Length: 272
Image (cartoon, rainbow, N blue to C red; front, side, top):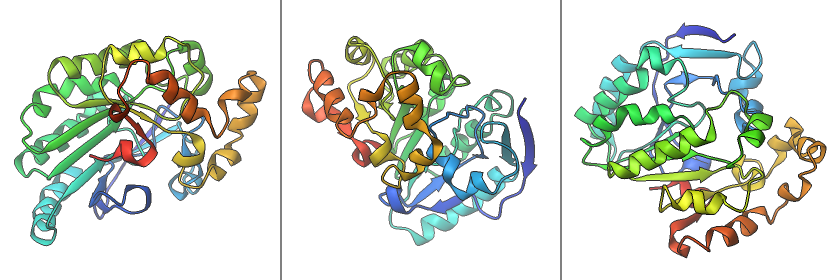
């Protein structure tokens, strides 16, 4: 049972920094995430640590998002020479409540009127295909990134049981490609997978981003260590997948199907 709470924010566009310093702003329609993936680095961030309830059991809805965004986009355009937005950095813009609220869809409508120069949308939800009609209207540079950490639903259920099924995500990437919407698969973090995974990815996309716990959690793996994820790999007898060279091993598999310039590592894969 997810606890949903309406909140009012002072701002909706946040100055990007750190891992996302290549963007001018981040945009998070929600606080918290109903998918509640066990390895999520946000679990170890203040937004989670100082919020009542366990990560994955609550979601705050930014009630005044649309009013704020209309004003802040106009203001940002006056001040910034280039507006590039990453949506979203600490939540999923297409989590289950989005079906009902259409908050992310309404955000896209505002951004369509006053377009940024670049828009990067990060999700793990096949619901993203709902907004293909809007994506097609953007004239700015846009990329849709869908997280697919493994090709095994059995593994997916061990680490993120509330996240959408793997085949649904693969089909979503394929549909985006068929509609000429730039899309990538983010294998981030890399979970145990079969030898067929690379081929399955090639069937749906020409761009793949690889990331692991050591580069991708923003703390050199310390946040992930506190979550006890390594022990989970040990318990499942998948220790070899929790190594510093896992990215290199996965890249070698991908190179049987992808060109070198179609494979991105860590930060470069989350840039436009």
